[in-house]
Image (tube, rainbow, N blue to C red; front, side, top):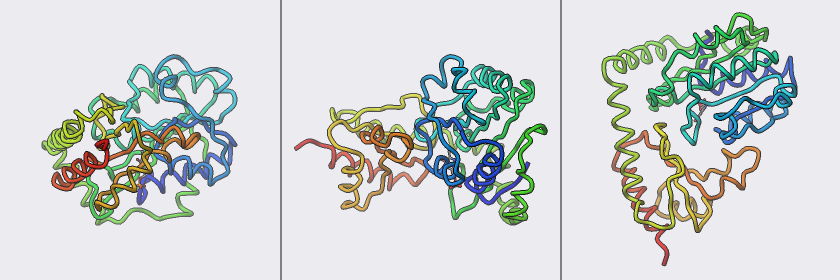
Length: 293
Ligand SMILES: Cc1ncc(COP(=O)(O)O)c(C=O)c1O
């Protein structure tokens, strides 16, 4: 396990290492945009892996024959979709049979108990070459207090240790000590409290917009610390611009659709892991902007 300053640093190390053995990666679509950016920045070609087929049947053999790695974010950002234990078992088995590396970004799993099964047991049992990027940064998003962890199978066969030592020596003991204390607090009930807090924040957004015919809820099952809002009559970028006049910040979803940004035009993403008053203000501003006049 390699401790990094952030999951983006872990991702950069993995991307550089992958580029030494392959030129093509299948990446879940949509997902957090810097994953695609970092892979492409290392000259890796990307094949979009849509969420519906990812969560349904086996992946097509042609896809697995054309890539060196399958990269999946679970729970996904921004949709919150989670790869189940059974799905992971099949995915790992398929990747093992095709000699493809299976990489997971589990940065959001602390928010969702459905993603808290033992991924490592399943991955090890399959003989797949695997990498998992774990992250504490989304759980306690304060003052850049975070650790990204690059965890990998013994048989990975990528130069991750060498690239890691080229980039950093280790994470500050101060940060590690603080993350340890936060983790102890999480285990002693803090995580359950966090889940309740995020669920309450999500309800504020959904209740605040429920009667607007211009909006919808694209991710009804999500437990991640983000909430997408579907907007029927304006683009996410138009709403983002209008919200800025109210000094409110929300993220248009174009960039998450790294292979086809236009598909993100009708959604906007709100961060839920923040103080309740600014979120309520954001929902009021959103209501104002989205109410047809
Ligand atoms: C799924 C996922 N992975 C990685 C990252 C990158 O995290 P960081 O900026 O802490 O490196 C993010 C950021 O939001 C993310 O959503």
